[in-house]
Length: 493
Image 1 (spheres, one colour):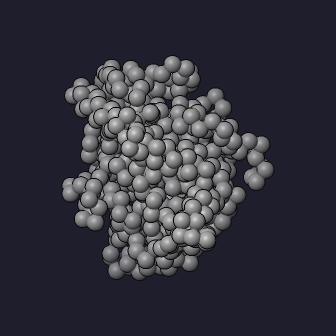
Image 2 (spheres, one colour; image 1 turned 90 degrees about the vertical axis):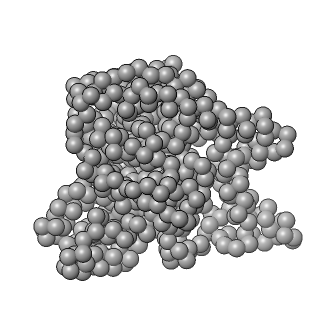
Image 3 (cartoon, helix red, strand yellow; image 1 turned 90 degrees about the horizontal axis):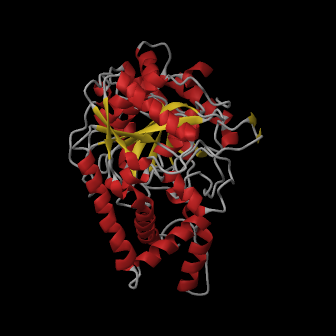
């Protein structure tokens, strides 16, 4: 049944409907695939028994004519989503032993629609990172790494923070995976591993039951191998949730129905500020190629300006750490997770947080605490909030001239593990193209567009108006079909 793991979601749904295989058979193939890709360290917790039980229940529902939109599809869940009775670690030592007594709204929606959980996948600790090298459970290795399995000549990062999700999907161990995107954590790993990743509009997916990093930025979304699969999975993930005060009460469209392939007359914004100095020639070339593909499909490229783009990274790395320092204050060793005893309550707090948080998380907590402090709140945090509003206004003005915006997703192809470890600033620059849309709360998607001179995937990013994921998906599929990328990772299940 190895071939079953190479199906897309759409193909798997078709095969299940035609009774070519059962959900149990499809799940068994993926359970074996999860075992095969263990050298990548993509999964933190495997749940084969639960997966097979869910698949059996799916087959029973199908036999009764009760078929959900994702009936019988095996997926992976980023270990930031709370899953009832299954460990949820956020890839941090401080959440060791934590088993939620509740289910996140997004995963509840997926199980309601028939999806099957293969397990919880690895990530950067508390989603803080761009390479999946800050996890307490070890680095995730990209399936695109060259050399022999387990003895790669060059271990590549899968991107972050949703690196485990990206690696599992790219390596054919899951039909799709949930991701979260705070500053690019769905889109950048999707680009690095040659898959599709979409961050919907802020408020489109509930944040309830998702371990918080930066509450005004975090947004869940799907990671899949095709745009059509992203549309299928996104529809199941979305929906209004009264438990989340930032959830928007808006009807969820049939995103798959929006994939008409017709983009004639659409105006595609090309932001001049994204042509940054020092942009690698192959990144500029794939961007130009994307513009040409859309022109050939009947769209009209329009130069736009996003003048405050140059301040986006600085703004993000004030706002996000500030919110993180507040959110992570709840991890104190008293109620759940790790506890390191001390001579006093204060010692216990310090010992627990010192041992429980990794280096990058501690760095961001300290930055956040600093910018929120009495002496610096106005100079840093308040100023960053004002600039964020300006960035949002830039996009509002730009969308008066265009229907969708096209940019590169990342400034390079995947780099090697350890390559940028000693320079946090270089690591943060990986988010240069993705952060602005996160600050503005806009939908954004990365689509595979080709491979670089090193044979590694390159992605193009599409940004849309608030709650216009349909246009983003429609244009994305046009790029996907024009690019017709056939390259696959050297290591697949």
